[in-house]
Image (tube, rainbow, N blue to C red; front, side, top):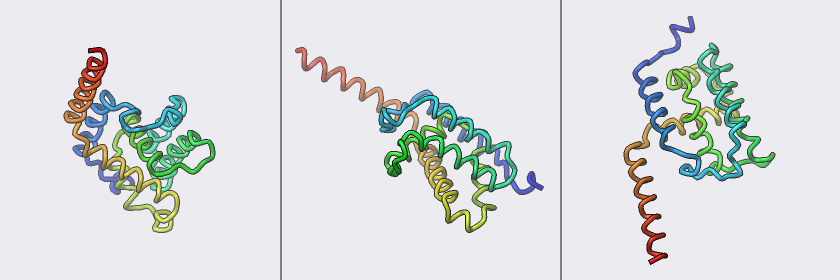
Length: 166
């Protein structure tokens, strides 16, 4: 029954995975304005592993729980202080980009379609909404422009340094 309910839109899933693979080689935590104190590789690794579990799980509740656990791993970066959206969103973006889980688009559509209305209003819904927003952000990044912007930024820094020494 699960295979009939989940729409494995291979084109959308493949396009997102390909885009995330490209972005992994371009985007750094610093580019996303992730503060140094909010970056601990071992914590991100735990989060990546939790996020990758969603493809193996069958129920929307279990998939959503894996997503919640993934984000919960990241909350330890904030030392029991509630993170602001400005701090949390780029971390979620970086986590999705780095983990690059298979069939993410289909899994999120499945969760959104079949998660109970009560759960959509709780923390699961909050996490799901943030994840979907992060995916929308990642889909809309122009990786070529981003790469050009980074190269231009590096060139401007070199020119600024030259000006100081001239």
